[in-house]
Image (cartoon, rainbow, N blue to C red; front, side, top):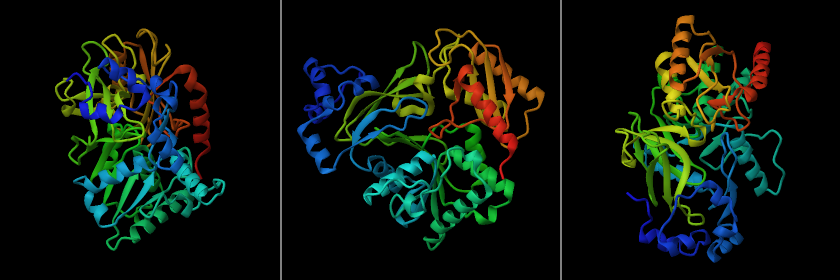
Length: 438
């Protein structure tokens, strides 16, 4: 597959300024994120888009930007939500809850909660509330957002009780008590740990299904959730600018969800079995993306570039760590941790040589980690894990246990960092953890 758009796609983008030279040349290069930003929004402006913006049928938004710069895009209102709802209504493990009217409770970053509250306040012509109420946090008649804190590790018993009560309220709106629990997997794992700690399971109605759709889910966290919930646990893969592209099934396989899209894979380095995800999409009519490098890395069942054989989403391309045997992705480290130390909860690799983008594999590596029960790994297990990290990265490595690792300002965890950026934050987090959570 050469990745060039079909005649139908070219016809649908012919008026978009950014693509004029490619149409004239008859060749579309890979579209990088800086190119999207260059000349924005003029490079995307068409008479139809200008009319849509004036009528409120298109809007400017920012990508979520987990640990990197956010990108401004144009899309229809509720573009990502509509993509989610359509997938919810069609997914073999989830469709039943959609069609029977089950409510959706969303346990994810506080930034998402604040966005919902801000949009609702704007509709009323008011300023965003400092502490959003339950009604402030209702996205629509189906979805309620729960989280009000940046770091879920800081949730108090009273706060957990409030969230469980709101979950019970959502469940009670269905005659059978069924609801969909939408989450960041880390946030749900934190909630489970709190419920375990305070013995609150009688207050926690079990969901009919769980969806995690907001970040990479480590193997240990996925296992931890599946062991505690007897329901489908589904992973969705997508982005703010594209909508959802793939969905997991309860058996663990991924299925493409590519209406108005096509995908190609390009190795991240010669001979690598890790590939960059390149997407052509006209799903968003106001900002069609042709051969767009999403920034995500994937693997296939046979190492080929066949997008129909994707089995793993491996993390972000910007976070590939140079190593003697080739770039190391988030999934490579995650596989080691999952295989050798299933008790590990949050982990972060801190490298001393500049981390992502470093020119070589020199320097040292520290695998900072927490465990689900707070107990340090035994010395033999920690030693095996350090040896495996050394072989993977080509750097001398050690393992460091922490009671708490700080979450990022986006409300998501970084798996890779440099020593200079983490020392102060980790020390502060350990001090807060030592003070205890009331």
